[in-house]
Length: 469
Image 1 (cartoon, one colour):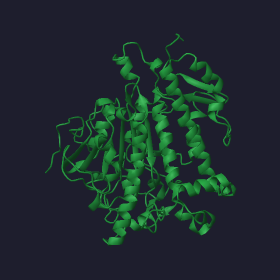
Image 2 (tube, one colour):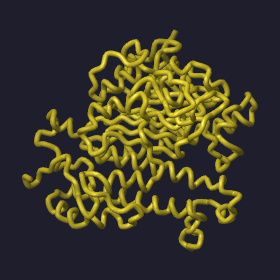
Image 3 (cartoon, helix red, strand yellow):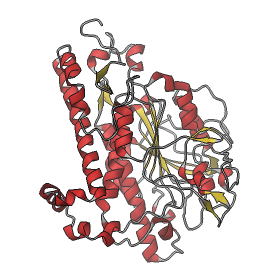
Image 4 (cartoon, helix red, strand yellow):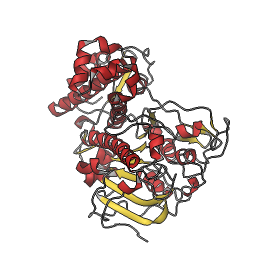
């Protein structure tokens, strides 16, 4: 290794641990504007999937192009407005088959119709676009892709519609018949990044020794090679990793209930404004909103670390499976589960709760975007070099409507996207055109994807406002 110059693939290693690093100045070639320097800041694609749709009356922004106002549901993204493309009137024609949820979930990233089956002979009809990207560029990173979730895989058959529930547990398909396995345990997801990469034998699950302690010797050697600015970046990275480790441990202890005997834990509960009695009463488990929100945000932080360190350039996250009945009673003025509330029947109290649940999902999306924007990369940040899609496979959970899907795309794609606009397309413009455009920006040479009519226009043209009918 040439003193003062580091490979982008430099790893810190220890017993069973291999830590990738964020982009450091020492990894950039001399001549910062060179093509090789730009290649050191690759583009990432992420997708966050929300089940059960949204309140359609509270989603669509007012105005088009750059002159738009965020809607009630999108208002948590006010500080990120300049980083957003809100996409209106896209749909997924292949999911317009009458099934309530499974077709919409299984086909979200494939733009095809899943095969009706009650058994193990699954077929989504296509490889999902994220996995086509991973197939093309996955060899460049320790992990080809990272699939995360929050709910375990659902098994059995939904007799109401005649589909195996497995379809509702996956948006990523490595082949048309093989769903990509998702990780729902934060500890295991963290270990995939740091305890089982780089060809080293993974350390024993349950080992609570900090990965930073295990790579301390290697890190000390590296620090001596770095300039002051890089040393500061390395310190910030280590702080971020350690913070996630601590939060994973707290999350585990919250879930087990064991931390309630710890005075420090009780103080933490009170500091966050939660009542101790809610935690002590098993019957009030659904009200412990901190558990669910914190669990989701840990997963967001893990995905952010994966992108920051170039451990992968492709990641997906499912907020819930199809027909998710997640109880959101921890939110103000919400009583009950997500799926049941989504069948609002136009009742005002249910619509209000439905809107609040949708806002919560948007808030978590905003949390990830802020994390990525705060991660420096060269003279920019990770969000600028990312494309993060958020949306649902149906618009209104009450109508199971796949028209005019609720979709937001954030980031600048390394300069290939021009955000800060609300783009309104002709009614029933294929969402597959969006997928095609994103795949091309990730390096794929493709002319067509599913029912696309070419790449969705205007994504990188700041003067474009849409193709309103």
